[in-house]
Length: 120
Image 1 (cartoon, rainbow, N blue to C red):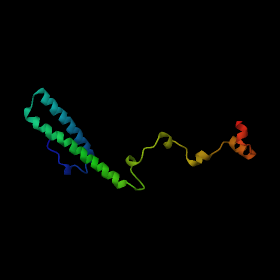
Image 2: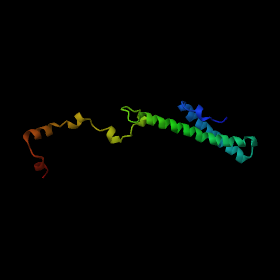
Image 3: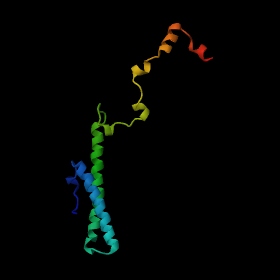
Image 4: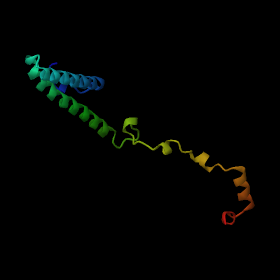
């Protein structure tokens, strides 16, 4: 695999991740070939692939950081940039449902029965 150049990478999200996976696989194959003692001409290729992996990772992290900076302070953000919420927050009742009362609660309020007298 030829040497990766950083200016060629931005703007290719899915390709970057796929290429990163390919680089990792190739590096492991080259290292196995080195240990087994075959394909001596491919030894210099290990260094090229080894340096290409961080280069791809840097470009990926920079695009993510720029994405975060772009949406900072905006009213609407993509789901991946919104803060994660607890299960309870997602499934809580809305204001109307919270304020609904049962028939029994409504009767008690009409009669004016103090709640302290009930619990003591």
